[in-house]
Length: 380
Image 1: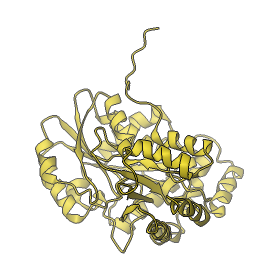
Image 2: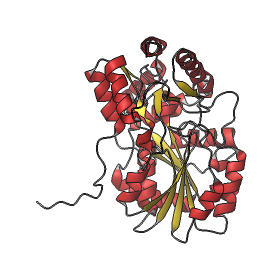
Image 3: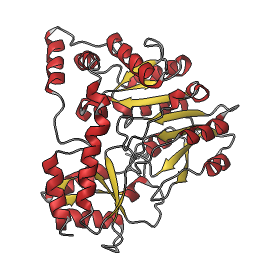
């Protein structure tokens, strides 16, 4: 058969590759971004409760009402941003499905989408799958600050969307008020949409304040906010996220969502809706993950790695230029095989990576996992 790949340059993700290499070499896995500790037993019990209550069939396509109402309350209380539960909130199969549905609903052949690299590896392939053209802004270590004049110069009549990730995976930077003010000036009086991937919203450190795109009326009217309960509640394998967007934009997203997955696990949605009433479970995440961040930073300070202090997410970047001349892809494999610690090369998050020697470490791990990794890394 003559088949023509729509994504000829896409292979297995770096996360899968490094996790498999970690398993083969019995290495501590700090590569793939998921916790190795369990979620709350109460949340598991709630899923069982709603299964036993008979909530085992399809949910409403946009999500169960109870969950959408809790999401609306959370957005209003934290960001003073009001979304209508019925018309402007859609529960999705994780943040990834939300992004996929948004891009597929709005990006057509020849549309240009501006992204900021290093970028989560989902963005570029999804845009290209639907014929979009990626225009990337390269951000450089250690600050990864956005040059908004460069963004302004990249905008054209073909620009359909600007895609943000805040806090950013893998660069761990955090957007400030001035960034959003610059963005407002760029998109005003245009038809440019904004997709804001905010799945790490509750993992911000050192008393810094997370700012959502939804807090700016000039942006909210043209923006999609994507969030994830996988990150929020340590349940990445449950694949539950959501999208907030104005009614007219939400209508288009749901046209794709209903034929892509139709709906999300019903008992899980009911369980999360009840669990969200316990606000401390997610409002305490900043402190919870900062302790893990600080523990890993303290351990790495005893090694030749140079740390880039994370402002957000549950990742840490470290420069290994004092250790090796290998490129980061080869060095990450070397580290996994030789020192039994698996990480992710930051070059995997660029289309054309700059000359830098950076690895990404995930610290969403049990203390004993981090201790084991530090013990091995000290020998480097």
